[in-house]
Every structure is written in structure tokens, then in C-alpha cells.
Image (cartoon, rainbow, N blue to C red; front, side):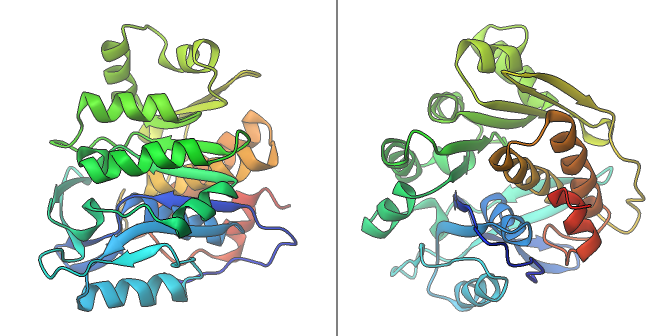
Length: 305
């Protein structure tokens, strides 16, 4: 991870709650986890990215703190487990038709987060609270989500990424996310699951117009994405890229980070969708979830001309 962000006059605070893990690729380990990835890309795009999670008291935990801090991510909410039985989390990553397949270690320290006064203070002033479903497979994660939902201000963007990962993709976790989020990013496969679970035809329309969501994004891989807000809908056909030297790991997290940047700015649907697709495509063309971002790519994602 390397922070290449410029220094804006005012930084929004994006607090990312959830897993921080080492992805064990065939060619070696890389630091990742969706919340850590979103915190990284938020910093790159000019926000104050904070990671609320837990690592072990082990060499991987120390490396995690060092790498995240070097990237400019606020690690003040990243606690270390005292029990040796709670190591820093790891995920085995394999590929099927260039799509990543994840095998998650359920004993990682991140599965046992601690709500504390520092976390409460951070969420009281957060502009964005980001979370997903994976952490909610464990009771400590569900407890933290309930706390943060009752702590953030009414103006806070509560941005969720469904990010369903079997066997932890429980209906209970989905219901909790839908209850506490006010903006949602999901894949078209995940949208189909929601449609069945809640008995609706158009999930995005239902979330925005019936449940009062501020925004919904549905990604369609190389075929782009659709954004829906109370102001309307915009379809993007995707960006053609060469993925022979890259992988899809973290592209969705990069996409979400750009959504957050433009939602905070109040950008148009078209500008938001275009910027998010372009940035995610660049990340997919590289190996790993947090490649170094050239200034031209960052500026395009930020909407700079």
C-alpha cells in the first residue's frame, strides 16, 4: 500500500468497520479485507480513512499496523487481541476463470471486535460509516453494528457492501445490513438474492423509494453498473481493460470508494458512475486489491479535469 493522495483543504472522515486480513495468494500473501481496502482507497481519493477492526499480537498484526499506517490510514481504532488464540486473520485465495474464490479462517482476531469509547467518539463525528455482511456472521460484529448505528449522526452516510461470502452469507446478516444502511453497493447476483429474500422485483427501486435509501449501486462485472437515487437512475456499460496481468480482487472495494467520494460531493449520477467504473477497471488490471494509484487515475476518479 502506498498513499498517493493530495492534501485537500477539508477531508471527510470515512470509518470502515470489519475484516482486515492477509490474502494468501498462490504467489504470496498480501494485506486486504474489504474495509481495509476501502479505507486505503478513501485515503488515496483525499478522505480521512479510518479502519475499525482487530489484529493479533503476532508478526502479521505488527506488519498490518505498519503497512496501514505507512499508507496514511488512521489505525487508532485498530486494536490488538491479547489472546494468542486470536491470530491476525488470513484468507486463502484461489481463482476460477479469473474470478477469486475465498476460504476464510473463522478464528481471526477481526471476528471479535471490541466496541469502546474511542470507537464511539469516532462514529459520532464520522461523515461515512462503511460496513459489510461478513463481520455479522459473529455476535461481536452484530453488537458493534448495533452500537454504531445508534451513535452516528443522522447526516452520516451509512454505506454497506453486501459482499456475500459463503458460508457466512446468512439471511440474518443481510437483514441487519438492510436495516442499518442508507446506501448500498451489491453485485447483480446479490441483488437477485435480495429480491428473493424480501419478495420484491426491483431491489434498487424498493430500497430507494420504499425504504428511503440515499443511493443504491448494482455492479455487473465487465458490463458496468447501475446507480439509483431519489433523483433517478443511470446505467454504465463498463470499461474494457486488459486483465491478463491483473485480477478482480478488490475492484469492487475500489468502486465503492469512488461512490463514497462522489456521494459526499453531491456529484451527478453520470459522473459518479463513470468515475467508479474507470477506477475499478484500473484496479482490476493490476494484481492485488491495493495497487499504487498513478496521479492521473486518482485525479480522474476524483473528478478533476
